[in-house]
Image (cartoon, rainbow, N blue to C red; front, side, top):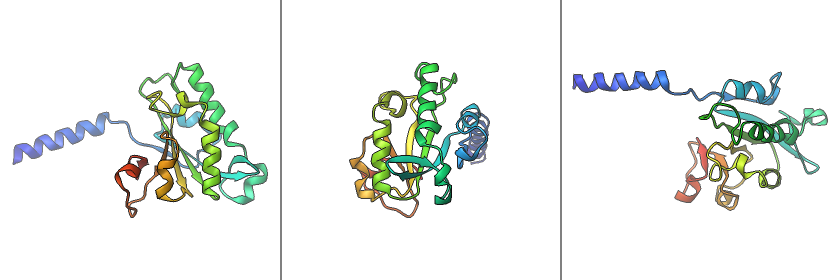
Length: 178
């Protein structure tokens, strides 16, 4: 038993030393250089709060900021696509780095989801890991819509799970993380 405990502690320590930490860039868009610092520091997930306003996906923490809010497309989607072109199918020169873009929908979940799907569907090499294992994975948080509808979205759209929710096998496949 003592030997088994020693082996476990050794493996645990090795894992801590060599595993990449899962850093979350909460409200990344509020940083001096959104996306840039997160990618440079190889964060696991970047979060952007999203509102759908007049068919545009805007990035803001609350409705008071919407008048001057940048578009998701210009703040994240276009720069990510540009990085993929620059780094031949990856977001950076690190061949093992593939982050998550967490989009926290603040309201109008179904309409915002439709706009997100429309915005990324022609860039599957950048946002679909079934096409490119190094793609940026999109995970929806906030107003995620009904769990029963998750499987109706394209397979490259994942959802932020919650510990108190129950998922069937098909829906669980769409949970990016809990």
